[in-house]
Length: 109
Image (tube, rainbow, N blue to C red; front, side, top):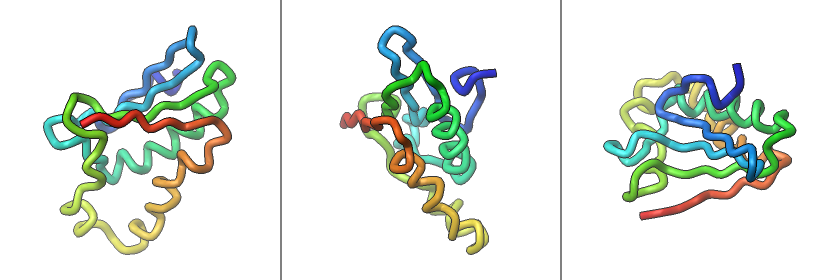
């Protein structure tokens, strides 16, 4: 199963073979596209897969809908998460920075 065929927590991955792009869509528009703790962990997995995919030359990040890119994380989830797990958030959030491929944030709203 490819990265684009897998199911994630309110995150979609769309590949465009013709343009050699992959778009990661934060897909929770009713909640300002916030990213759950699980979604943050999945971002690392998604980027690792796309980084190894020779059919993808550019990765695009965007939020679903017309209002915003992403409100960030869920504060209630942060408050309920153990400190040890929180200390590893930077690894997940830095996945785009570690990518050897160009990463573009498509902002709207």
